[in-house]
Length: 220
Ligand SMILES: Cc1cc2nc3c(=O)[nH]c(=O)nc-3n(C[C@H](O)[C@H](O)[C@H](O)COP(=O)(O)O)c2cc1C
Picture 1 (cartoon, protein in one colour):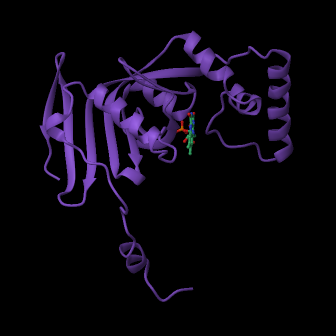
Picture 2 (cartoon, helix red, strand yellow):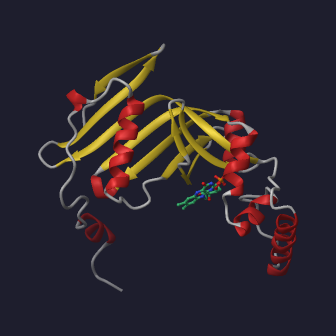
């Protein structure tokens, strides 16, 4: 037990420390995809922890928002790729409403990237390549397609279901469940946020207007 309140403990924490990268918004490229890969490359170069872990927010058919962490699987000129089960809650949300919001946060660099766009299923071939790269146990767990369903009451039932799925994977190492899906999020909006020691923060937004990216600096 401590006498110090949560408010005091939380408010005494430092948010950013050390050297932060600079962000010259005047020199930023006109195409936000270029800035995304520039920042991502820098995060990899500087060994930011889990630079490919991103939050993704979706909205259900009842209008309820939800977020979760997913891995960024690829960045192409079309957009950002992730993979999951189409039968999961997020997969059902996206089938109903493809609009989704992604967030990358690199605390070591004081950087945040927000991306909004529509997510669409990629080819079966991409889903296959992605699925087969997963560890056999991860494939077995995903194979049933029950992500986020309540577990059976007994551990034995769960273990025997995963064991049966693992046997199936071992017998057919190329097995890919129909529900495993590579998704492409085609961005319509980006915001690049940089913590800055002297100015507090810098924010550059890009919005797609027709086929032109319109840039705005945002009030912090
Ligand atoms: C670092 C990290 C990476 C994750 N990567 C994935 C992923 O690539 N695909 C996935 O389906 N779930 C991934 N998860 C699990 C999801 O956050 C989530 O629990 C799961 O997809 C169920 O989400 P849903 O119920 O909203 O559909 C990851 C979790 C963490 C913490």
